[in-house]
Length: 259
Image 1: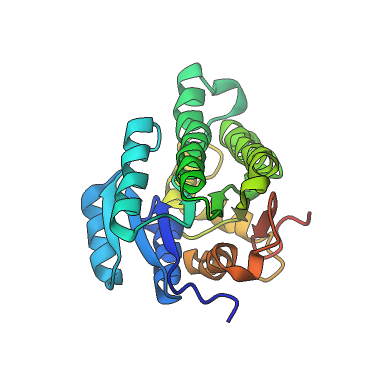
Image 2: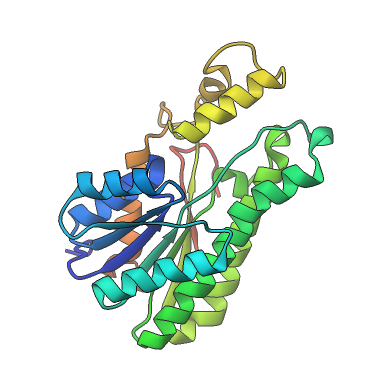
């Protein structure tokens, strides 16, 4: 089977909950050995235990190179190498455009932009040392395809993820390292609960789930996304079925944005 991941050694950041957790579950179910990495180490260990098998966990702060390097080294030491790295950790923040501060910008960009850059760099260095290539998958967003005003700096950070994905794909194809991105839409996660609250806090909506439901209504498949909607695509991008694909951003949003 093209999505058989038996023997694949994978790392998932932001893997303790939401999209990352479902990616980790899906990868493990397909046969991969998975390191669940998260800023919340206790939650990462709990998720790894729930997945079972050879799944392991560690703490990572994607903003800190030493932390990301230690994560990659942990996976390589335990599994004998690294074949797939999912730079999934991210944050969101709602601010009206004119209210975005320098601190807001740095907070969001440090995690979503710099964190992906560092994750890619450390993954690529490990894959180049191995000499066997690999797959890097970055979590972008429909906000990396279209800018949304109350999420302008978040949108900018996800546009950055798309740019980094394309640049790395061009740079490291010669090393058989593939770099792609997934662009989720409106996904029922804790992050969207915070976004929904942010809309209310800024007077942009008046009731719980109003923003979530309003955005989700744009999906032509008729529902909001669930975190597990990303699992199959994650397995595809880690496996042989996507062996000739690189530099692509796959919209997995139920038809909210057509590219």
